Length: 110
Image 1: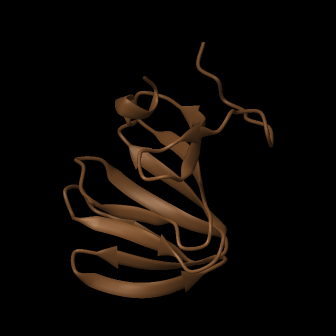
Image 2 (image 1 turned 135 degrees about the vertical axis):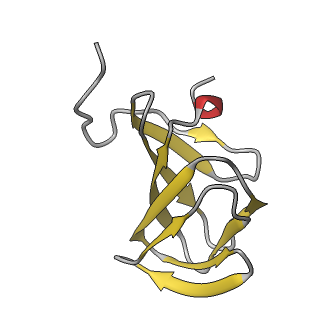
């Protein structure tokens, strides 16, 4: 049965290759919800993937670059990354992003 509820602090953090951390909150084949934690100065390196991604700034301030366009987003801000576009972030202060991916990121479940 698919897990349909998640409680705060229930999932374990995993270190990411770029020195940040993530935890998968919920996942189905069609959709995934993931929380990312960044220390001040932490970078989510420029990359692309076939998944559509939407992100919500739960805490902090981030410099967000999507397809060569850069904006500063703070707590409560959000952005969408269409499939295949190059994107990345830099944490201007410690913070957290909550990202959804469709379809799910199988590489985050391994």
